[in-house]
Image 1: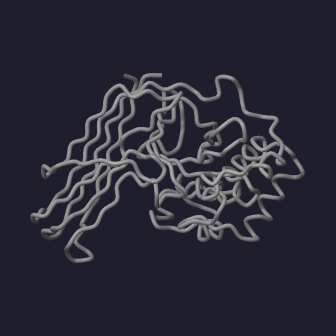
Image 2: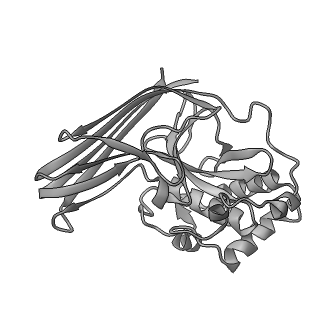
Length: 281
């Protein structure tokens, strides 16, 4: 599937701010199921863009704006060719004993609590009830995805970017970021490495997928001997060719599309406008 994405983020400030420092994770990840054909990032006021790879090999652009400004616009345009990582079927048949035999320092961070994900007894008990004795890593992860989708209400505006998983567990409602955090926590509580994914979702003709109006979020789980596979708990579906991966991390804190800070009053930000369009190319 060949997809074109346009993503605009615009910040409006009540008063001029300065010394703005920003990191942008909008350059798509490339792997066997995603090939980048075109990418353009434009920032206003004009800046000198620099880039680096972060701890999880996400492509990060960063820039500073020293002079006073009352608006900041960040536009990304890209064309990407996607395919489903599930063309050979689901990675079923791996027992939980394979996780116990796994010794990989790179996976250890995806088994622990993190900034927005909490692994505690209540999370483990709920996940264990869903597991119900099944000895198949991916089958259990998929069952947990369906459980989160059925047990949490999708309520735009019920949470915000800094909402912790503990609140989402208590209130049983949220948006795609929250659904992903809950699924990640449940998988990790059972010893399944899980990571957060930010990206885009193509909502094709006749489809009714939630989260396609802005940046989307889902979860990837590690299946020993098979690799990472995506699960979208917001829509109770496998992350396939409709999902365009931008960044991964332990949780939202490490994969947020745009982060930054500036020198100015704490309430200087009057509005943030986000426009995302995903269409066939």
